[in-house]
Length: 362
Image 1 (cartoon, rainbow, N blue to C red):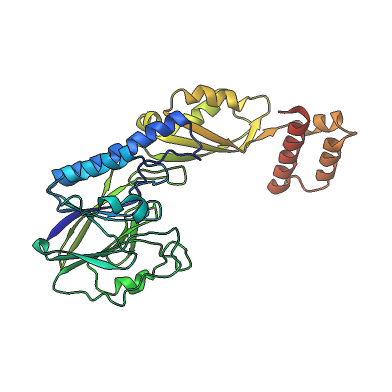
Image 2 (image 1 turned 60 degrees about the vertical axis):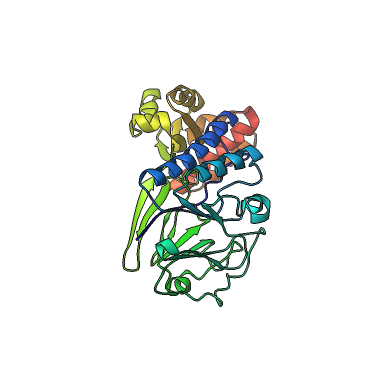
């Protein structure tokens, strides 16, 4: 039996150039991603796994420095009893990132070809197949015509690919590949972990990169032989990205809103995780939501918000004060519709809010 960790998409070196969070938080996250990588290596050593499989995008080559590369390869080389197998992905192309490290370390094995090739490990009766990216897009599926599996051996396939067959990121027919007889298919590229076919898994990313990547993040520990495939998900992320949907109503006061914003978040998550509130509904027009958020934010490690809440205006008063301009005419036009209908009512209040914002800068 061979035991290994399957991971991918660490994106080490990321600087989060287009992230919504602050540069200070970005620096913290960059450091934490390196720590998570090192924790994964330590875990593999501690549980005496035989292999660490990295299915692409170990690095973010655009931002990765020579120091970053040395740190990572020194860490892997120090794990002398661990065989490390790497394929390049679309964010860490082979020629730009790995070429200089091929055959430099006895325990680090890097796939160098854009075609499917094989690396054999006879001690474990194991063949690992894979390919590395060396350009920014692959429109065609990989060619398996020259792949002939020895069914007496354990066969693993590593790909950084997309199971959507119309993708430009190495589209694959996962059903066809899974029927070829591989004992495990270690996929990278999609950041959400999960099984996509018989013995075929996306590892996901060990650390989320932004608020599109909510939920637990981690790696797979696998124990594999010709008869059995035991797969265990292990959480690795220092922090999670948490998006909370907040619906307000105009009867809520300051205390009610503060309580709503914090009541369902446990203290550990509040001080540790990356949080975003997506706020909707209606709010008393006299309440300053920005002020409330700033007060609440002090209790969070990180908090941002998207405010789609509509102020609960006194429509008749605003109409009277603006009867000779576009605001008054807009209200009069909207009042011709059925305002008991939620869609019409929301359109009225949103429209008034936008028009008043243009006039008053609110």
